[in-house]
Length: 224
Image (cartoon, rainbow, N blue to C red):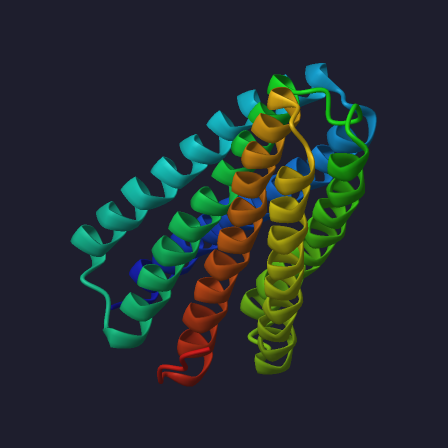
């Protein structure tokens, strides 16, 4: 690869990374917005979050298409190919993580999230999990951008906190269902169980990104 071709290649990688960073930042903002929507039962904001997901989908499609074209045109060597594949995989995982904000927003749209004391209490646990999740995404993206194994390891440990909240919430939701005969409350508890699962799965997807970042940095697989 001559100097000009190499420079063009590096510029294309830079563009892909800029789009990847945008995906991460937008996703974090979407989750922060879900916190506000949950606290205030803000259905208008929930609708905005759902619409915002299309931006993430478009960026993901652009990254995938441009990455494939780059591979086809440049026939990159192994280390460069690993960079491109890492970008594709991270982009795909971020798109899935962002999808869960739609599910949370649909939950907010379907119910008055402040009309049931038990649900409101557990919404606070959702908010705590989202706070941990956004921190986890931040750390993970920093670890990729700075090639920091230490940040990646910190991000990986945060998933345990999300798992613990998930398990605790699940027990409380089941107890809530057993204590009420109100069909609307039961339905809301069942939907809240799904939101609880979505947040747990989002943490798992961030862990997948951490694994990809660690492979990108060290060139060997880590299973977390």
